[in-house]
Image (cartoon, rainbow, N blue to C red):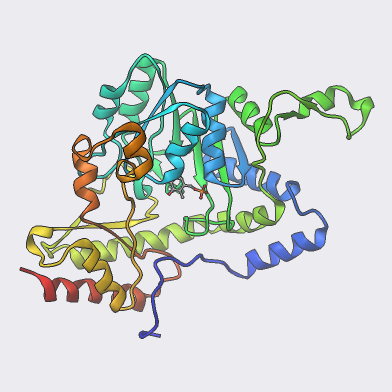
Amino acid sequence: MSSSFLPFHQPDIGEAEIESVVETLRSGWLTTGPKAKRLESDFARYLGVRHAIAVNSCTAALHLALEAVGVREGDEVILPTMTFAASAEVVLYLKAKPVLVDCRADTLNIDAEKIAQAITKRTKAIMPVHFGGQPCDMNEIMEIARRHDLKVVEDAAHALPAQYQGKWIGAIGDATCFSFYATKTITTGEGGMVTTGNDEVAERMRMMSLHGISHDAWKRYTKEGSWYYEILSPGFKYNLTDIAAAIGIEQLKKCDELWEARQRIAMIYRNAFAKLEEIRFLAYRKDVQHAWHLFVIQLNLESLKIDRNRFIESLREKEIGASVHFIPLHFHPYYRDNFGYQRQEFPNASAAFERIISLPVYSKMTEADVERVIVAVKTIVRDYRR
Ligand SMILES: *Cc1c(COP(=O)(O)O)cnc(C)c1O
């Protein structure tokens, strides 16, 4: 065991998920149906939010949410550069402009002050991304949104289950988008969920998630029978299958248990590396529940003889998988070349990128696995300290 490769992530799939899928396959109902409905109601109840709409990715959820809150061609949406491709591309789907801003140096979450500075007459929405599963400064962000009449669509791909000052992420902004991608805190292989407390936003997202077909339309014409439908808008094909939802129902039941396992590992890492001056942690706020989707360390490069890439290579040589979240969007050719973003505009994200490493943190890790990561990190630090 101890000589095999420890992957950066492994999903926690048990017999319950497998049986649930088999049962769904045998039921004859494969696409969106009773299982998707059940996942939606379980999810809404879990977060205490009015509406939850199951979709086939978080990317789809973000697209639907921006569309439903009214982002249109020429509008601007403010989001952090320290995020994944999906957060910004959905803004472009709507022919709006993604306005990137820098992150805070301590949490790598979007900097609320930078949001305020980036607001123009065209700004329509703010998209906070709860980096690694630690909630953004939601009081400040909601206050900025209120003052400037902006919508808040949260990218909570990392933030299940997470709380900000006792409130669930999913029950704060105008809409909140979750991912059930294979590496996320709960998974359906591919999948996602969007939550909202707003009835109109929910109705719009539900309709647009399935070709812009109105369900109410055919309900009004019950005599026409179930074959009748009306297209009210050219929508999308974003519905979640019952096969995927069957996995999600079982994963959601384990959501707290999986979180506890990650939280425990995160605390072991924090204790183990606390005295290493070569390793720095992100700030860990006490007024939040961190989902611990990621455990990110930052290298103190001044006290090491190797850079971040060599550090990750050395982990790999010790058969430990690691990753980097994220290559800031302003470094990518598309955003750099089309919007002219430069690294100096984002000093915190640019500096962090050189230093960050995401270590494995998932419920399938044994105590021995956690110990292997700790020994590997400590050994590399000892071998390469200045
Ligand atoms: C994974 C991820 C997404 C996209 O999720 P999908 O379900 O794969 O579409 C969006 N934003 C962030 C920050 C992510 O990490």
